[in-house]
Image (cartoon, rainbow, N blue to C red; front, side):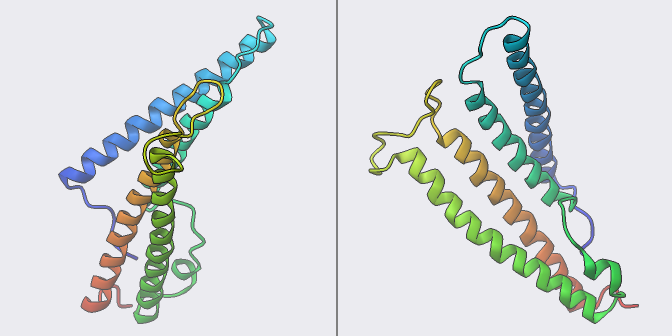
Length: 177
């Protein structure tokens, strides 16, 4: 398994950004849902369109959380390799294959995520006209799609880091039992 996350200046800045977004959005979604429920059940009024704001906040929360999980390798995985295969060449090779597949899959998602973001940012005609917006609050949809695209980019960066570390482990023969 690749060694833990590096603590360089860029990583500290990015992790601070991820933490800020995660804290802000967790508080925001909590207050939003509490406010909408209070408005409906206590004050008997409907907070029309709160779901549009909730979706925007949730996208940023989920994808920055995914990027942070990729940074510190705490994302959900089924690591049978780490659990059952002893340290050695086989484990290093399987770890390399895992990170290679993760990079390839995430690279495909980054490609399509860019198209998704570009479509919503430039509009269906590609000339910044008819930009898709939410129905009630008229929030441009690219604000949510930017969260998807940027989260996928950060995930790809950290998957590439792990691929490089696992390649280095194979070349150096680190982790021999």
